Amino acid sequence: MENKSFQLSERAGVFALYLVILFVNATVDLGHKTVIISTIYELSGPGGLFNETEQLLLTALVSGLILLPFVMLFTVSGHLADKFAKPNIMRWSAFAAVLITLGIAYSYHQGEYYMAFGFTFLLATQSAIYSPAKYGYIKECLGEKGLSVGNAYLMATTLTSILLGTVFFAGLFESYLGDSNPETPGELLQLVANVAWLLVGLSILEFLCTFGLKYYATKYSKVKLTMGKWLACGYLMDNVRVMRANQVTWYAILGTVVFWSISQNLLVVFQAHAKVNLHIDSPFLVQIMLALSVIGIISGSFISGRDAQKAIKVDNVWYGAVLIVACSIAMPAFSVPAFLTETMLGPVILGTEVSLGLALTAVSIFVFGLGAGMMIVPLNALIQSSAAPDNLGSVIAGKNWVQNIAMIGLLCVTSGASYLSISSEYILYLNAIIALVGFSVVLKKLKSIY
Image (cartoon, rainbow, N blue to C red; front, side, top):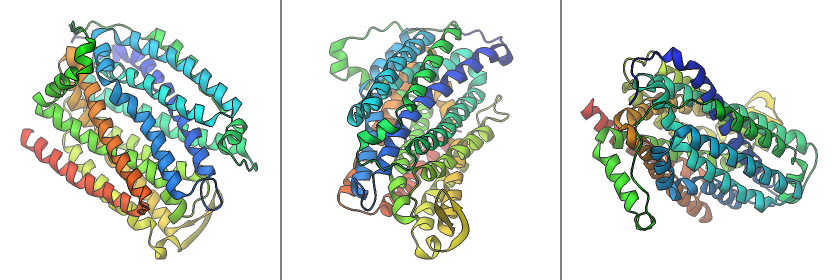
């Protein structure tokens, strides 16, 4: 069982190494995705290889390939995290990332875009197995009293890597591309192929760092995984029952589901939306704008994690929800009207003249992230604190399953809307409606409990 007498400072070194591993892991995932998405963006637009509908569909497909393994493998990943030592799972997953990034390097150099597209699925499969062990390790390392602080650092670290990785890899992509005008995705990949070796090097660093993780006494599940029950979705039903048995766990999970669904949809839709409505030609500038949400999430995470060792700040869920809903409405409201998008402020960034609409949209993206950080830290802490130690991996995997089912479902709606030529503006307003309804249900229930 967990030793509750230790001080958090005693395990700061191990936890710091754990954060390095998370940082590198997120950077590798983000780096490959940025190259694939930027390739689509670069070849889209008037006179490009892909029109707005095709750009939306391809971007949604990339996101779908990333989400699908979390749905397919949630039972297996949760079972592994409950049954085996989490450092071992993280180590083997990191080794798998080394092999996958070597395959990515081969596909880039050969100009095999669709092969590289397929490696997105394999990299996501590695992440799906990694995830329950990665999140479950916080409770083993820091205990109950360190959950809020640990989650704040985890989110801040992961999102800092996303922020820096987005800007770095998007900038690296444009620097390798230079003034070239490739006509096919394969030609473009060959121009930026050296990026893949950076991914390989980072994966090796991550693998080596996992050897520094320590093993802490915890209760492991003795349940055996049987193929018949798995194929019959028996484990799925069991895990759903476990999640729903505790109302705090279930509604905290639903809160994260609503947020990640609309945020994933925003990432997919905004890129095409920005090109058409804000007239942004540079994929680097679009990535910088989206990265503002990450800065906001980091800021919100520290607000929720500060002085939270004594108690989880449940009130921040409400404040965060209000900001997210308001900004979900503001983004399309600021980025579409001509009187905003055609009112120029003077500065030119990466070849795009900054309009009032662009500036206000950028502020809305940042505040959206601020609300998200304030909300997600206490929700994750509620999930982890309310789950039994030998069930935590399954609960986290179950959260991932529900979360990713919702994200894939919303991506399907977005793809269908794009196929029917429905404007990206209306898809963004749909995000706002989902946020309003979903958070209202979650907040009403949590308020009745706390």
